[in-house]
Length: 105
Image 1 (tube, rainbow, N blue to C red):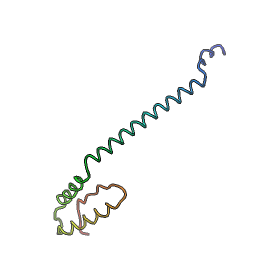
Image 2: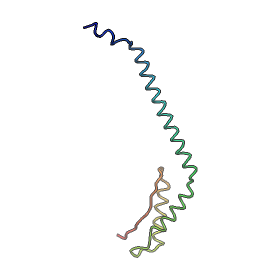
Image 3: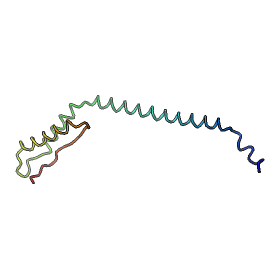
Image 4: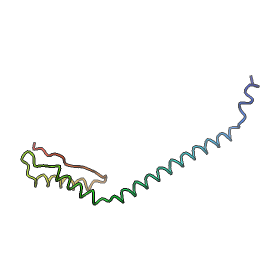
């Protein structure tokens, strides 16, 4: 029985461990490189697109989306939307909140 397994163990454990660690490190470095590349691309694209256009579009979207409904005057709708925008602008996270409808309770 021992003679059957003699050819099976031709690699010692040290060489196999070296190849395993080398493979893990190579894959990890490749994934880290891809993460860095995509993070950099996202950062560059966000800087190139600009935030001023988004704020102007958001302001025009609020005015176009909120028609005068249920007898609420446009001044009240604008005041509510401005208060919500000011509240969410102080938040640490980016928020794309849009007021779509205001209902009288």
